[in-house]
Amino acid sequence: MDKNPEESTDSISCLIQELSSLPGIGPKSAQRLTYYLLRAPEGQVRSLADALLSLRQKTKLCTICFNISDTDRCPICCNSKRDARVICIVEQPQDILALEHVGAYHGLYHVLHGAISPTEGVGTEDIRIKELLSRLKNNQIDEVIIGTNPTMEGETTAMYLNKVISPLGIKVTRLARGLPFGTELEYADDLTLTRAMEGRQEF
Amino acid sequence: MDKNPEESTDSISCLIQELSSLPGIGPKSAQRLTYYLLRAPEGQVRSLADALLSLRQKTKLCTICFNISDTDRCPICCNSKRDARVICIVEQPQDILALEHVGAYHGLYHVLHGAISPTEGVGTEDIRIKELLSRLKNNQIDEVIIGTNPTMEGETTAMYLNKVISPLGIKVTRLARGLPFGTELEYADDLTLTRAMEGRQEF
Image (tube, rainbow over all chains, first blue to last red; front, side, top):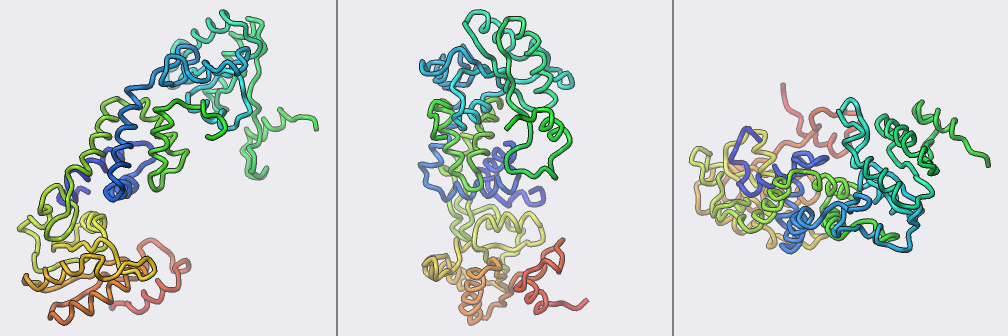
């Protein structure tokens, strides 16, 4: 792009640059998307721009579970059909999306907005643990499911959460770790295999 | 996404849907991008939305070469340092971007906005051939480089262009076809190998 600044015009190179700055979109994809949008119906481009603008203007954190929502209380917290005695703790709002997509869970959530990471300077004060504990103390909760990621940070966070929640007399469980569906044992990494062995279940 | 409509809120699912409709962006990427944008600086999201809106409002086709430009005449056609006696014919505006990126060409362009394709019902009348011929007749042109894609449609278009341009007494050349850089002979397809052999050059 540097050799010939005249290669493209302002509006085009401007959008290519904006799109390139997004994660997972390289300069080539940004270019392809831009030329696609040049030919797409004008309404589609406008809807996309509008959706981008509303995203930040309309969304806020749910005051109960810290999910991202257009309302003060997210649709999950507002849904009286959900089991309010079970809370699944996740790192990010998008983890809720993944779990809801499966449709196997009907309790509530709590979004930490991060995980404890000494290397990145994220401590217990930097994620929504304080709010979780006050929520657990002020409500009748039977079970807390720890749904942090099976990573170093997620494990550390899970261990810390178990340490602070157990004394409250609440049952603490953890999403099962093991071999992902569709893979072959041969290609599984050592840590996954170790956990699959440790967590083995009876038929 | 269908099982639990409450999994996400309106603004979020709206943007995910808009992004999913773009080529090369699947539902997972759309989701990842949306949650990225939720955390990105507000200015970045606004710039992206603005860039999308200006893209369609500000751009037009260059009246000379049909490149896409913010001005009536594109910066390449306006540049007096470029060789106005050589025209490279390409299928799409993004092909200009690719060639300019290389920086090895200093003539002008002509964008056909398509290629002849009987199967898709694109005939000689549907792409900018008429405008090309009138441009060739009304200007002093020494050489026309055919830069259509090495596909069935591109080849058909190239043959047709050669047939109609040659009688005007203008030299017609074609971008070399052969083995792409960095590949291994072993993995090249038959057509590429055939062309690499046919087009072999002396050392």
